[in-house]
Image (cartoon, helix red, strand yellow):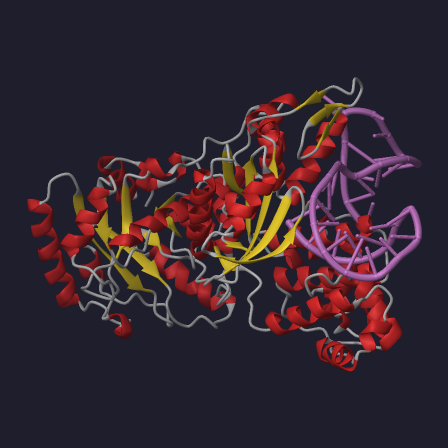
Length: 583
DNA sequence: GCCGTTTTCGGCCCGACTGTTTTCAGTCG
């Protein structure tokens, strides 16, 4: 339709989407699975890249990204120049793009979608519904009564269901199932696996693995668990169930001797396993979920632990959070894996709310809850005046709260309570409280809570204003993303990180599971640039400290060690960081 | 289409489950 090229550079997500569409079309057309995988890998690479992929391409350096070669670089440049890609245009002419939706229905793949289109002209889900109702779908080869009934059920449920759930909502359900599994007499070991174990911020389902010599009895018991709504698949080693909560669970079972093999396999990621098995082949081994086989001699090793699997291949055990094929295999080979942050390394929490703003507990209740969890210090960071809906603090109330916090601190043993604020970075770039008020506080966190739609230069100007303000110590939830609900504002992560390093400003890793912001990708970049971070709960009630483990998970995914996180330091060391000697 | 501690060409992880198949294709992770 001849849309003229615009000056605005496409986002990484947009470019990744284009490659994914190409990959989908290629699979519909029956192209080589390796060619399809290449486009998907490059798309993933674009999504992970913290800087602008378009800028990298324009600079002629796109092939520096993993999985990008000459062909994909050429196509990206073609897209940037003309706003279209000839290959994609041709494929769109052969199949309407809506056919790809069909392909994404669970249980429907490229072959089935293609057959439905070729035999019946089904182009979208409405057509499919009609073909089911009229019985026409039976004319499509490969369909029988059972598969049609199943598909009909999927279409009905599909509309309402989000494709990924928040880690923090899924984790407690998985823990409950695991506890029940471990109580069964026929189970000798059980663990969660998959993206849940890798601590991804969102997950599609729960993967569980168990060791047992009696899978049949185990499956019978599992099917009777209260949270299990119904069993959808059941074979000799694998069961798939839907929970009352609508989440899906995959449960796989092996003999205890192979538990390590299965756990390693099921934890993934797919990319990690592909790379691991390719490395294994080069070293003369074949790896599966049952065993490690020495190719030359045919000798079989079964592994009760994951450590054995990696050791057989000459590698150090790799923490699950790192298993994304982002350099962890090389680090495990060279013995340079990071000494990752652990929950117990955290000595304090720098971002906690109370009933002075939108928290649901008093200063004292929060302080006692923090002490109970073994924290040595916490800093109250209630909202500032502009956030009216959150009962934000005026300068007078900040001073009054400071008096209350100092009084509380003087009579509490075993924990130090600090005065802070989560001050708004307003839409015009000004800071919501005057400098003389901020200067009296121990820790000032500055956050964006408005003007999310502003263009990147304006967002960056606001962040710069906060970074350059000598009273600001921390940038709160730096991207503003709300997982599954709201994308980040137009953040230039590289500029933010450069500014944080230059000014000695700390970047928050907000542990609330709908934020997890900084993301792992950005944390890893910040680590490399020499920035410091803080893992903070953003707790609004005493249970909110439980969120810290999600922040730690995201930090571990970003390869962070205790030395990169300021609230692993004792109070004295923290105060040194806040002194900001670099100014 | 990408990539290299056997390779710039010939490989590319490996297996489970379902439904429709009569020995396997398709999908999924």
